[in-house]
Length: 297
Image (cartoon, rainbow, N blue to C red; front, side):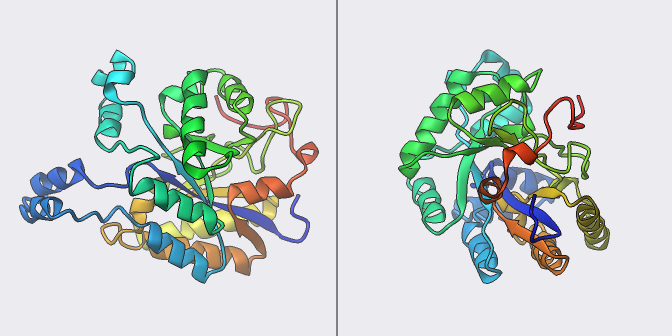
């Protein structure tokens, strides 16, 4: 699949909450630190790490995929959102693609070679109309079509082919959702697979940073194990680092990310965004799902 390389490592970032908001209040109460509220009032935003990521990746001559999210307003979504804490917090951290800071940031990433794809909202996994609208709004912001998607909270319909069919019908060419926020590894597959008899591909998620050990040494040992397993499998591995994990309040995660890229290259890997990996792959070389790909129910 990547004949000139031992394996492939796809780099991704989900733009869930680029602005630190309610987290300041949580810190003030948890740590009994009123300075957190003063920093919030002063407009500090340590979650805005896009330039940090750009510099780090550009210095290493790599690019990655960013998936942008526009959740519905509370008044536009189903009433069930009002009783779901996670989705209420989504509303607090909500942004729009056309916002004065978000739009230029996405366009700059796109113009400089990073992939900007859609991070489909929680509702869009089971609502094709919303998925189409979110894709339209992102394309309007960027000025061109987008081909890649990952669903928020990695949510897929039951069966997942319903979400994949809606993505394909909306003009997307791949999904990068199957995975876990609690475990890491190749349980969802070690290469892209085809849910249909066409060019639409699904890229399993190998590791999300929140699922890695908190201890830096253990975290790196886990990454090293995953990389070596990727070599053995000749895998197409995908990692997810949310932008906020590059902030100083998540010590060591930025360094782990850099080391992951360096080590993957030492092991002979191709490293880049999912969209570029998709362009290199012949779909006929990918297994069919569900017959040939071990995605858990």
